[in-house]
Length: 94
Image (cartoon, rainbow, N blue to C red; front, side):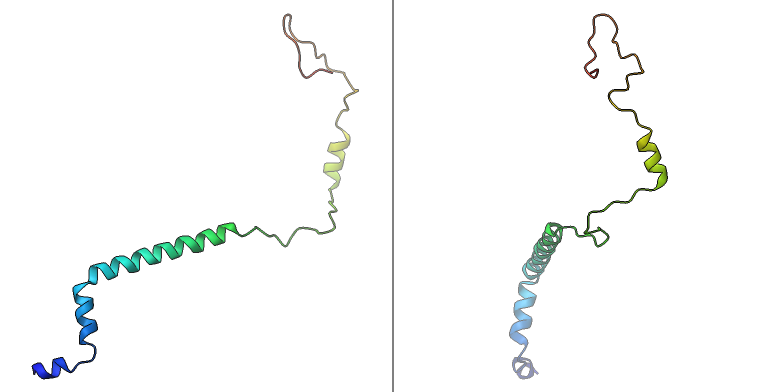
């Protein structure tokens, strides 16, 4: 019976694994964690590319936006009193 066990070609591998199973487990887990961190790092370094960007650079506005932009006042339209209270200076007045 003992002679059959000694003829097993996998016996040295089984003995090594049974002796160092905790060390082998730790090495496998740490290797997996390092690999996952490196893969995530490479994924995060890739540039974000969108396919919906118009390469011509033209932008289209709807009519509501055009009306709102046209209704804005220019800097020469000073219809609102921009004077500050006494003792203060209005930094935003022209």
